[in-house]
Length: 450
Image (cartoon, rainbow, N blue to C red; front, side, top):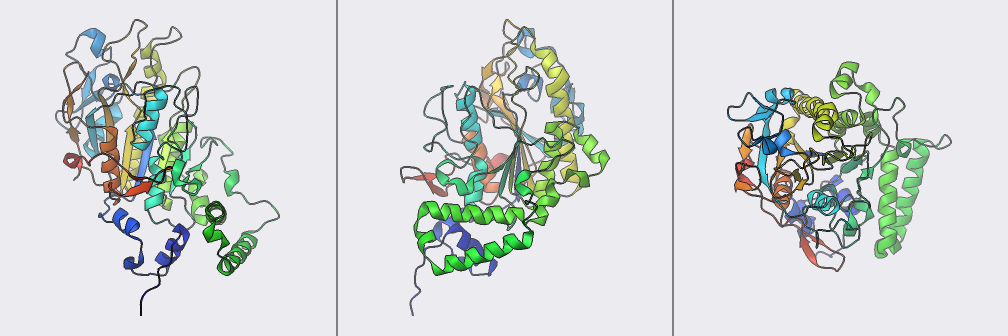
């Protein structure tokens, strides 16, 4: 007797998985996507909007002329040969868990185009600050992970917060694009540091109980079994899956528990810092604990007149005070705290952490005591999730202007990330024009994988 071929929706694939069906029943595309052995269960992307200066963080040039090296001095770390900025002293004791990729390069000099590139792994058609979001552009990393990963019931695959980054217009690459809304992140803008932090999306109206929602879900399932309409109509199908996901979140005890930061000890909350970004990093750890596979925490694009890491030295304020008062102290508090916390809980080995922006800063300090955009060579910090420890990949030249060795691109970072998650970087998604498109056009950086 032959086996009848039945098209499987993503939701039905999850049902099949729950019943313990053989992987031989899965479509070839999903088999291809999960063909690699995963070393990481989750990713935390700490997105440094504006472009951190490599010269004032992890690739200092103390022997370069003053207009290149700047005013900060490097300090040694517990790993011989690796130094960091003197404003990041806590990184000296955790750098042995990190990989510094000092040779990332591309050609996008505008925030929107470079931001889209660094959030998706796909170079935009042009380097244009007027780049606008459109269905033709690629989806965010986390949306791809949602597409090619098996979801955990009651927990979103991808969560992002607490800002929608933009520079004149919303920067593309923050949602699912042509993959469909069902793969969009669970996104919110509430402040995790707020005293009354809670998510309206996870709060039931007073007259609706969890049991009532479950009853409605069962009714929908029964109607779905009696009709093929939802499966045949793409838009209705997307609405059905979105409804199922929303109900699952509304009734999820695990997710509600993860968002309840009051459950954390005051000492732990203080270690992360009582800031939106600090508590956002703490929330990222809690979400990963709950089973979320991809978390993006955006640093503020605009606070008190400062545009994140966009340290041109505008408004007659030099770069150094901006770095000294806010950017470097908040980095020194949050990044090592998150890494140490994950390590102490035995989670770092299975959690890939990325600290990166859309580009770096110019080798030469400009005439208003700042640094301008520089994508030609900059540093990305990575840790955990199957990577080597205390390792530097690539190098910049003596002035930090261009890669001297190990040059790589954003798509190589994305290919490495997907491979560590057990997703084949060569897996294909279908774009708006119905063309197959690899989820990454790069190659994994083998040298940094443990």
